[in-house]
Amino acid sequence: GIEGLKRELLLEILDNAAFFAGLGEQIIKKIPLLNGKTIINLFFEPSTRTRTTFELAAKRLSADILNFNISASSTSKGETLIDMLHNLEAMHCDMFVVRHDQAGAAHFIAQHVSPHISIVNAGDGRHEHPTQAMLDMFTIRKHKGDFTQLRVAIVGDILHSRVARSEIHALNTLGVAEVRVVGPKTLIPKNIQPLGVKVFHNLREGLKDVDVIIMLRLQKERMQSALLPSEHEYFQYYGLTEEDVDVAHPDAIVMHPGPINRGVEIASSVADGGRSVILQQVSNGIAVRMAIMAMTLGAMNKEFRF
Ligand code: CP
Image 1: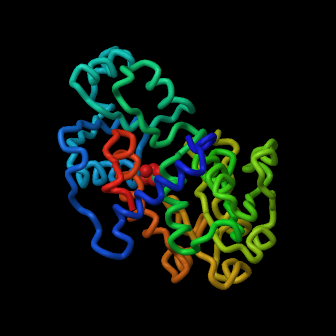
Image 2: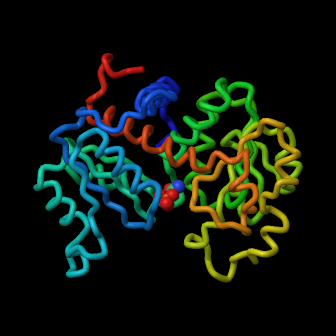
């Protein structure tokens, strides 16, 4: 998780990611840092970006990685999760990358497997999505440099968002001037102020003069169906249009962790427009996940640091 992560370590991860991203020079597509290491992607929830970029990151570091197909596993024959993990452990793995719909799942798994296996949290329920926050911080730093003068607005379904939680912790750790959360009362946690954010319910008031706009989708998979807002109405009040972006700082960037829902939380003209860095976030995810894997498995040394 990002909560409690030291600023120095977060910056070291971003610096190492910058090395892998090549900083505008040649992108590193193969380096023998994790030769002989075995990594398993254990995704109990769907994913496009996170699973694929972890896989690419591992391959670029020369590790062997396998995407474990949970739905086709013997858990359907009654095998418990712990027994399944012990069997995977017996195959001499070095790392599990875990996504699960339950908060604390990665931590739980870490407590039940050998301490020789590293566990990376690829999203746990509505708790945290630490590598997403790291790649978002990497993207912001690339565009804005210094964090301390920045105003950042996170817009949408904050209540169900693990990305929002991790980002709020990361932005505060890096010392941004102001973190705002913007959304309807029903989608902002009542006890959010202690996290050091300003709350706005009006989109344009929340976006005024901000340097970074982070849009979030409605996470319907974590909502009771009776409480689902109308998508049409939601877009009217909280969908990001070009006119809304105009109230932000003239150099503001628009971000979104994906998947995007066009016409619900963001207009296509903004998602595909000149301020959008959404696909850059995806590219940066590979470098950040390379840094996480290499550092976690003890493969970084001074020679490889940026
Ligand atoms: N941002 C993100 O976690 O996307 P995926 O669910 O596709 O991995």
